Length: 533
Ligand code: OOB
Image 1: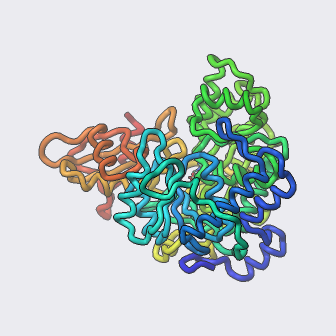
Image 2: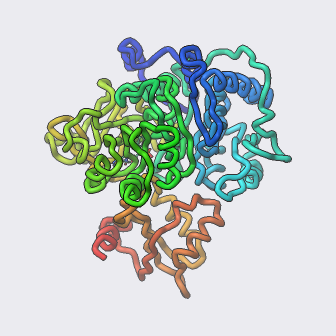
Image 3: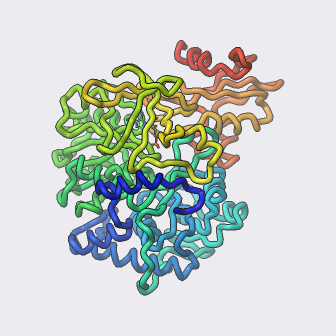
């Protein structure tokens, strides 16, 4: 396995293979198999573009050959920073076929995050759009290349006079050595526990299982029309079952970068979309928008909601408003996925976050000493299984505390297990703010704030929010003079090249921060302060 990654112990690998969880297949093979079975069918729709399975397969072969001409080889890491487009799908599948490893960044990421990802992965290439939502990604690429000497190649989806455009990443298909299905195929980003995001290695085989087992559970078939409404580089729309699950089954993927009800409802009507995946704030907006928007949503059969806790009042509105079934999804880029079953009892669908996807998923709900709590009590969720990582990439020190000695991943989530074996998420211990599905590491934001000339000390906690679930609240001890406000801090973080969603939503100016007995900042006390006001 790729150095810097922790393989599953032999005995587990053997077991997962012989029990059929790990197919002897690469993500490149997966598309080839679908192209052979569903060739002329439409695989992907984006605006007026309709790409068949056969055409997608050809384009991926040509792009893979083109990447090789650009000097990108098997084992190389490539930071992929593309919005939800056909090009994202082509580039990713071509990298899989080549055996080069995409590192999937989110469109909102900026120089600080991208430089970190390039350095962590020693990326040799960086893939960007020319521009997206008013932001110049080519200018960003220049900055990234200056800071990361390993990044030899920048490829631009769209127009570029400076770098090679995707249209020129095109060569006659060549025979490429097949990557090892049991080796790492891609890197996802952790929601952040401490500081900057960690890289999560996923193998071809484990990720195929992730997508295809999810596809089966969600009842995907050739008639599925899946709307990608969340950024496609995120695990949820990518593989839960998402794009990869649909492409494995012969259904159709419909792409959009605009999940607003105005735009998405029109697409659902036009493309007869049967399912999609949303985060809770979007699900809430959609259920309200049906009151003023008149679109035919009768094709919609399933709405998946996950990424953050879905309030039960919103859950209740889904079926009557949108005329489709709700599925709660409690997942993580690290692996473990929990789904409510399509035929689960109503109270299970409304008030739990589902059950582990795989019979081979092992979970424990434990106390602070790692002892199992009584059935039904709240505890820390630990998990291991055929598609859950055994270690973050190049993070030996962090791995010591993120995993138990016997390889269970400490999710940082507080859960309880119901009598039916479903999980209810009750909170978390990791120092992360879950801003409607976007994860913000408190420590990361605190480090940026501490660099502001007007701030002596800062602590960041989650503030409850009726729409987002949580928002980011910064407690600030100012130096002499006027303390910076929300707008000043947003501008400051933006100047530092930090994604906009990490800027504090609220600022509280205080004289001192409360401390615990051992002198650490007392975040519990701070959380209490924000929730009481
Ligand atoms: C998904 O993945 P990540 O990696 O962005 O975030 C994982 C974390 C979980 O550990 C948990 O804290 C939170 O997000 N979370 C939920 C949740 N789904 C995720 N908390 C409460 N209720 C839920 N339904 O967020 C993700 C990955 C794959 C599928 C769906 C979501």
